[in-house]
Length: 275
Image (cartoon, rainbow, N blue to C red):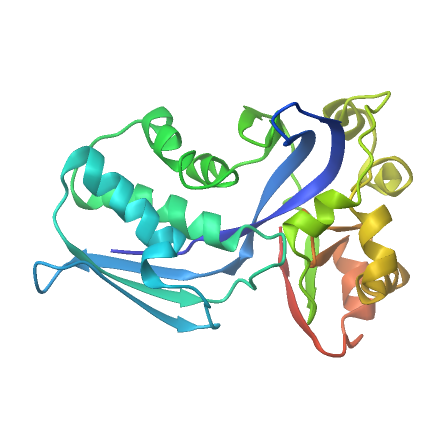
């Protein structure tokens, strides 16, 4: 069985408060991006041992620590599923704020559910995904969602960007999550993010919808700031860093994108597609 785990972007990201447990309460909208996908194939194992083979982009971690294998082990422990052979081709850049590893884990859970006719509900798969990583539950539903709490509490929102194109740019640098959070100063916004999205056209988002990580990350990694500005100069209706970085995306009307599509981003991975 072959599936295509897709990336996500964060539209707005407010760091609201620091919790007593050391985590932060956040508010962000996650939106699936289907022009940037990994390839995941899971088949019954040829032996009694589960294997994971990875191609494409280099994944620098032991097999058992890979989120795909963690997802399989969680399903194996709970439902006693048999061994499988897993093939993962990586396209989504790592350390980019695009949720690639989380998507792979969530799609592993969904694929195993189908492969072995477990008939699990989304709620049941979400509870397993939550044990793997904070972004994993989003990819079980894989539709626009408002994430709150520490990023693990999700609620559906009405947001359709299907009439727009997107340019995803991943500079060569990566931003450690711990470093990203160490520089933020939590502030509760005056207007909830979902109200800003619902009440303002995309042409006005740039003035009000922010990613709080940018303020501390841009001085350290100016290349990320430069990419964002370049996307705006190309005619993006809205541009932002995704998650804690380092990728940046621009949302374009099709005519604006065609006018600037030959713009080059040196030493960056660039993906152009539709939303």
